[in-house]
Image (cartoon, rainbow, N blue to C red; front, top):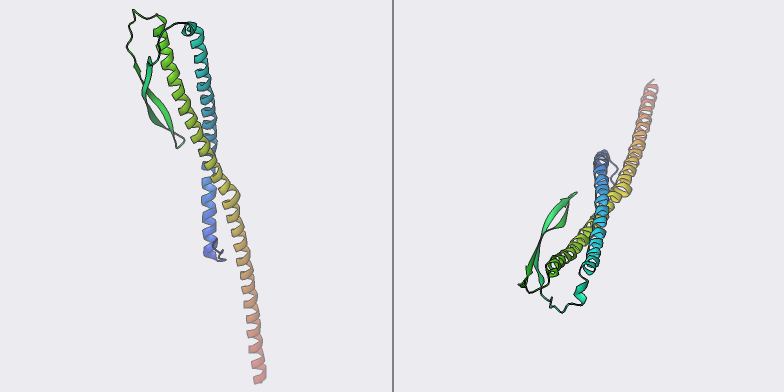
Length: 207
């Protein structure tokens, strides 16, 4: 750390820095609070998609109990071929957002298969999409938690270190300059008194 210079220029620099820190801190703290709220929302969304996925599995079992009994090859019936992830800006933080999920449905003869297979296809697509939504929601939550940690560290840096240090430096410089000014005044008075005494002595000696 650079040694603090006890001068008027240094005092001005410290005052300017303090003014800047105190100006930035409220906006940083506001962003921290906004990101904290978004992280709480992301947590709720993550729990919601988890619950939705679990509920869907239960629903499939309730709606299609015949899956355990029917001698029907369902392998490869629904295949997810890919999905598209977009980007969302939330309080200056880039978050992934699921935009599209693509599926490939194997050809099957509707006349030769039970009617419930159509329902099963939709449920399998929903279940696959739910798994993707869980991954995206989890990633959003992790990114926001990391953002909250970073902004909290910055707020603490300004609030607990930079601002107190600047105030302490300003006080230290002011004390030093004040002492130096008083010492200079005293020195000037002594010099003046000494000069006056010397002049008086010289005039008396001349008589």
